[in-house]
Length: 114
Length: 116
Image (cartoon, rainbow over all chains, first blue to last red; front, top):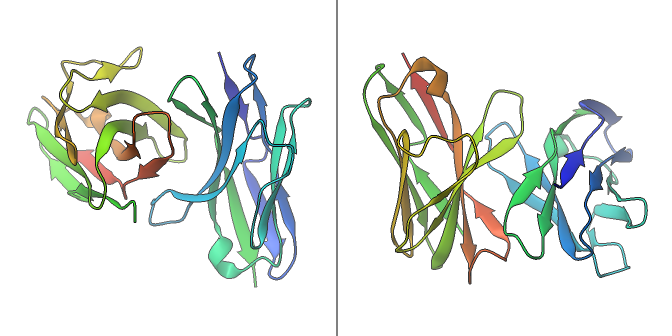
């Protein structure tokens, strides 16, 4: 069975600085998708970034980028130029290319300090 | 595009009553919808998968007679919590997928259920 681990329950970053959130996963599958979701206090899940496992190039979305290390089964999220609005829970998620199920990590609460 | 709504956003009910939560895809047809439960400060746990016109598939440990799911149309799925008890109090989130389950899921804003 696949698992997703987020080892940082909480992180803090100064406004305008850069922070990296860690995520590791375990799977025996070769084809899958990885996601980072943001859940602000409103509880609405918002897709931040996605990565297809078959792509070697790391995904980037504006200030958000990932470091995808397939061999190490690591999928970290880097937030550059942190803004107060980035404060939220961040969930790493795995989805098999075969199964439709999402497996979520336990989340990392990000605090942005003014 | 790809907006999913849930109604109600909050509901408080007495123990022993039933509560229905609606999940709607507003601007696309969702062949598959998913129901998650999120306990305070915890992750999302998949409860069941709902396919339009067929019976829902429940995850292990989820009581299908307690959590009734109906996916009557391509834009609506409902979750009914029957004979609710305080331990059913939680945050329930639905998501919807276009073109079958193997595509990105779009999440609703969630429903907070409190059972007194």
